[in-house]
Image 1 (cartoon, rainbow, N blue to C red):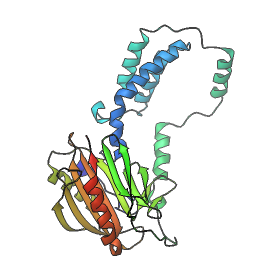
Image 2 (cartoon, one colour):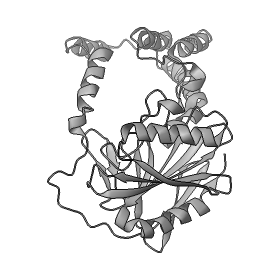
Image 3 (tube, helix red, strand yellow):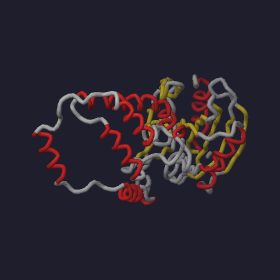
Image 4 (cartoon, rainbow, N blue to C red):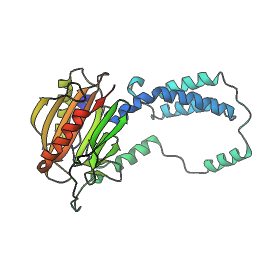
Length: 313
């Protein structure tokens, strides 16, 4: 899956790494810890429905509908952040068999609400939702600075602030950098260095992004090369200037320095990509981005963040 990383423009139009066919980004990675909790929530939901007078098997049928409509996962459950709809159907029905529905929820008010809902327009199909999302994600809607007044971005503060984007990670960055979450990871950037368009897509010209690329081969060098090749496929101006071994959070890491031309500013920028392996074989990455004429100032902040990063996986 690492080889399928599309790597939209680093610091450019999409602003960060976008994965196609792979799970990438801290947000997605953290969700894997929620499967057991979500299954437990299904059981509790079935119990509450029974106590409220509803047949919990209808909740199970909802997941059958999701699966039939194609809204469920098309990959093995162990690769998904959510339990498979079919498995949820079976688990809820098993729980429902041991429950007794108390009372009758079919009150007059409930019937009235059902009648009102029945008179509304049909809900959008999965195909219609996908088509609308595709329109919203068209390249013409990507973040752009055409006609935008240049924004002065403050240099990294000498004071520091520590964030904990997940249970296993603590990130320390300059105090004037704010945490920004997106579908691709977590970005720490100063004011004016991070952008988000109406479609929720992001871009950053100054700052540090932290994320996780799943599907590793077990070789940090090979996995890092796959990530870098993914970047290069969608960044024609990306050039490598050197790679070195460097500790990341107290473990072996690789740092690759690249040059690029930002689609946001149109100016040369320096990109530092540092990778290391987590215990489950996934690859943790840090991407530092700064305009070339400010690279010296920002590299000190990136180096400090790499040095004091705390990983407890």
